[in-house]
Amino acid sequence: MTKELHFFTSENLMVDTMEENNKPSLPEIEEQLKNHIKHVIEALLFASPEPLLLAKIREITDTIHPLRPKEIREIIEELKQEYISQQRAFQLEEIAQGYQLRTHQEYASYLDLLYKNKKNEKLSSASTEVLAIIAYRQPITRSQIDAIRGVDSSGVLSQLIDRELIEPIGKQESPGRPTLFGTTIEFLRHFGLKDLSHFK
Image (spheres, rainbow, N blue to C red):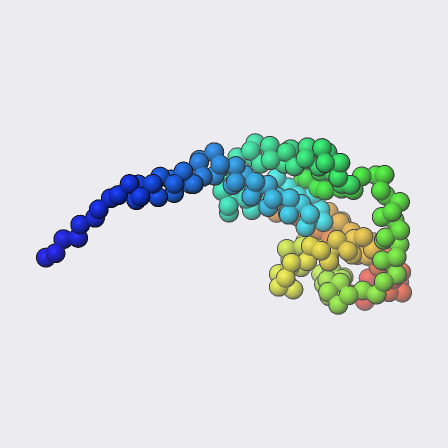
């Protein structure tokens, strides 16, 4: 049997030393992980049309790395302070035991103009589909709508709320107490309906 001989030169040692020096330190790895989780939380806040409960945020971030509630709150507070220091047009607020991004009141008049125009726009096929599901199945949660459609409905729900065709009407008595949605008086006006008897 032939034995392989490995020779180590100063060049080998130099390469090994350089590779070792280029490896991120433990604090750097922890900071990278924290920033990644922060970005994930920010994305969740942007996508959610309703206040996001801490328990729900933790459920999702635990798929990346388990954190204590205190640590998640600290990350959320960092986001809040970043928005303030950057003088963003929106702010992060704690509402109804959850967290939500909201536009500053000083821009309300501009948003009114935006939504005023949107109310006159034709409903998209996705909006019509979600609206029909809510009309026939109300009260219904977002996750139930998603299960029926097979895709995420957060954006569509937000648009329908903006157009005042649907609204939150309560909380489901289940873990996390998800928001229940139902149609509005504006929904009846929009479609020229007297009441909801047609959907029963």
